[in-house]
Image 1 (cartoon, rainbow, N blue to C red):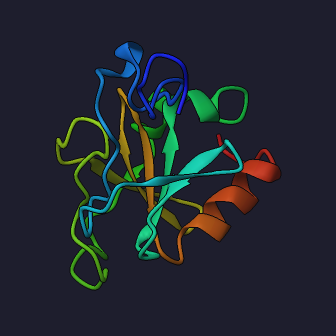
Image 2: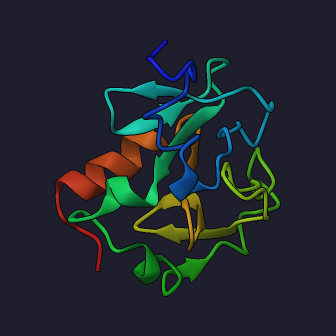
Length: 129
């Protein structure tokens, strides 16, 4: 705990710039926890949240909207479209290079369990259009 008594001070998901909210897992509702300062993960292993700020220099989030809408395989996908971990609005689902992800233009990307490795591999290769 810091001097002002707020145990969440300095946490971008509870700061005024982020609306003073706590990021929640869109699948189970658990409070997401920081992992290596890059993303937040669900303690129940539902998936990972990549805040918009963490994508800077890797992928511009507004470009995600131009990717192919995930219509064909939504029926076979294990998960329905996720609610944003920040604003709780239902996110768009896209697929690019066989990588499926949910995203909110205002806040970030949700990767369900099993999607994160493919997404990060694609980012590491700089392979997004």
